[in-house]
Image 1 (cartoon, rainbow, N blue to C red):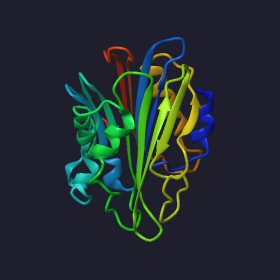
Image 2 (cartoon, rainbow, N blue to C red):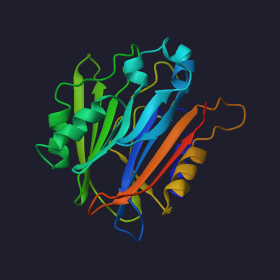
Image 3 (cartoon, rainbow, N blue to C red):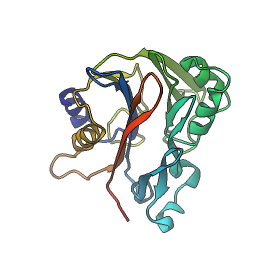
Length: 244
């Protein structure tokens, strides 16, 4: 994934990220979710596959208790007969449930996230990022962040499926400073060459590898491939830095 490697190679700390796109020469879609972390509590996590999707859980409960469990343990991807939801927090369940009332991506996100705001992790106030897909030809992506004067800013994007392309949104801009700057602008457009979940997961994970002398902030990457027409899951691949 040349474009992705170039993009992530310049980003020391993207935080958490979501990518949604379509596999080249296929009607399959892919969803990717990744975690990077600076603190011991943030790094003491892994992703696991459950019947309803992919969850983030602690690898060391003693480290997790020093952080905020509500922000560190959550469903990253949830799957049902009506669609799929991905997010960086517990809002994932609300996003999936919203598909019971509408399958329009942006409307589903707006309905699900009406009572949500950015994370309460002062002084960063990490944005909440979410994706929804219910079949058809478009993804819905959203960003909830803290404005300059403390206001809640919500942005929604309806983005098309394009073979061999993906849409990327992150919590941060990738600069490792304090406080870390929140993501702004439109989702980034990536060229995707891989056709298998393991290939794409490996490519994303390796693209986050730090240069010599820098701390490795990688935590986990998960990739799901499914049929765009009937939402049938084809492949899932998870790479965890910590396996204990």
